[in-house]
Length: 435
Image 1: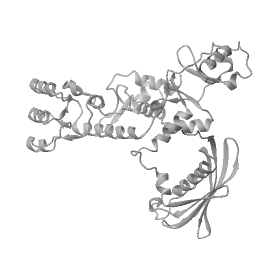
Image 2: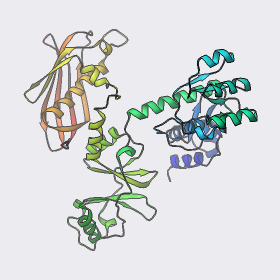
Image 3: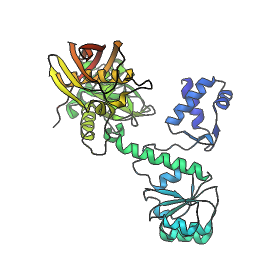
Image 4: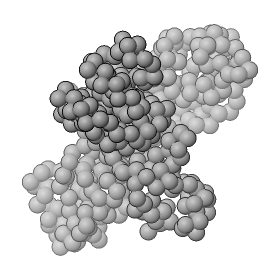
């Protein structure tokens, strides 16, 4: 087991609520502070710990970070609260919360049915909020009166107590709302993957592979050990020269490329193109839980781009005022550099110009050759300073193409003067025709 995995296992076994620091972790496990810091960040990504303003980093119970609906069950988990009443409303979705730091008469004016009101140990305000149709969050770890709990049960409005202060609770809930909104815009592997896939074991033979192929017509299978851990992939290429009695473990490709169920779909697509594979195993930890195909990914991304809630990407914003024209072996963009590309010195940002050049090259490939492309290398020869709102021409010319690789030359011209020049290479994957 790697050192980082040992540290993560240690963090996972800490009691909920344990405060964690880089120095304390380093001293407890006799590791460097750099290793401890990296492990804490990895644990944060795995939702094993959370960092709370004015509190620090604490161990919390693991939960699914990608909730689709921000229910009161989720909110209770976020604030590590205790439900005092109103259990019947715990599956309701939170849309808005407010802090009841005013007189009761004024507070009630701002409450709409279904809101969450964050309060301290003010029983009269808690009761008024429930009667106005709002759920109640009591901060500071306080309990409340029995008749208020009964009222919450009667109205099926959640009544939750948390030990955090009002500021921290508001921060945590606001962060959860933002994550929930982001989740609705991003597709993950778990959204489109095939669960419970057909797999093989190292002990099975080529004859077993051929039987599976006859039944399923699939040519690629993940290989797992006796514990369900992914150990390889076996494809028609692997068995082409093997005999029927050869074991899968002796001909499979070990340590295959894989993704987890929380990997973004766009990153999975990049991996497929980069490694030139059509199917990726999906794991949770190291255990195989599913498969995702390139066709699944492309169809999902194709559908997503047509959804009205998807925000405009920065690449689309940059190219919005440019006209595109096809030229021999490439494309030409002509337009004015938008003011959003300015840097702190008042000239065009070099990184923004590089993005413009890079995306022009990708566009040249995807338009002219019907490929999907992932950047492999981007070398800039020079970039001269210039002002925004200047009229420029961007030439992206394909100079070499092979089965899964291409090179392009990119130029930016302003008033017949070459402003920037770059050479880029990309990895290619043929597109799947959408039906």
